Picture 1: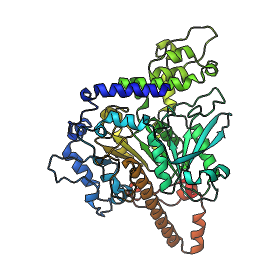
Picture 2 (picture 1 turned 60 degrees about the horizontal axis):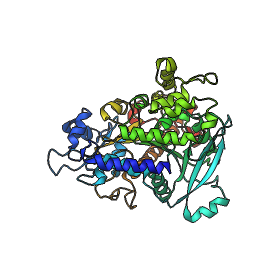
Picture 3 (picture 1 turned 45 degrees about the vertical axis):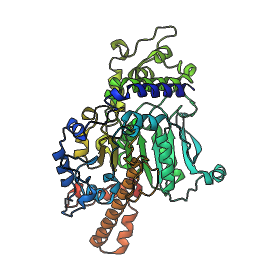
Picture 4 (picture 1 turned 90 degrees about the vertical axis):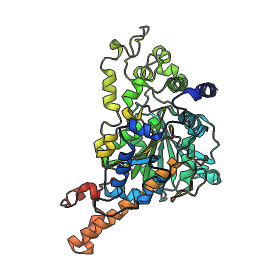
Length: 513
């Protein structure tokens, strides 16, 4: 009930201040947003044009890599793919048509408002045709996390009696919601479209999130991938022959990026995507989004934690926790303060005596990009420049990461809000591409599914080419069979290829074990 009151207050506030807010106006040109990132219209065109040609000299259809400029020289693309030039990047340009099929909403419509798109995707109710079968996973420290497996309504009664077959080859789509535990309309729609394309969607719920019982007094820290690691091992046990893909939403990307960085090539994930991620998380917690959204996030988190107020009192200063007015304050009280003697007054969050170096030490362990150089799989990030949750793109988007690391790809749109990405057609649907034929499918969902398909096809082709080369080099089919069963570490001892690794992409993946 309180959640709906919060949503109603936000809706009224938006309706009042929308015409005057910089997040609601639609008259600004995309050039201004690009210039805010230090990218001019001409540089954007050159960037797209240069990256449409492979390092091997194989041309790619440029019509699929940039928005048509027939309306005039001053028109800029509504979406740009920012990445390090590579063979995979050129393959994506050629085969992911959805990447260039984004047309931002303009004019006086709610779909052009970043704030209203965000509110609609996060708070508006949605009756999903998918049914969820929950598995509770007991962790090594006796904590509990929940895995919600999405199934169609047609097979819901059957799935109640029978778990998914371990012999199934359907790919698994692991979905990590935001760090506040809210299952949004965006997550439910993603489960629906994933089911329609043959995936087995499963939603990962952290301790105490989404009605998951809190069996211990320990909560999961923002970027601690320990619980997720155990959940992935369970999924591998349950579906040993299925490929695993991962998608994170909003602040949930912090957990996914932490997991991929810590596990490296042993993550068991084929490819991953982040929808509207928050990259510089320490700064984000310290500054927060604009006031109405900041207040809503703090209030929602307090409502969720209030259920466990008594048990949390054993390890947390609950008075300081529920009197905090910022996300940093809540995070500090939960994870950076040690409880004092009973009856001792709680220290105010953020003071030098209470936090000291604990806050900095906390983010040294939990910053999502701390081990980003160890990520060994392709990762797509879908972001909008007018995202009101993430904030100013110039200071919150690590463009240097995407321009230097061949594993990371950024789809940057001029408009779209936070996990919104509504298109000009109004129904969040536009034709084109392999996944363009399902009405009601979000553009961002089509983009990430095309990304998964294209990266899988590219890696499979590279693996076949390498195996063929090894057979020819070793001379004999019997030797080729040995290589198919060798581990990743043994493959790394092979002589280095004469080609550039960023051009050929010598993927070393644990799924081949």
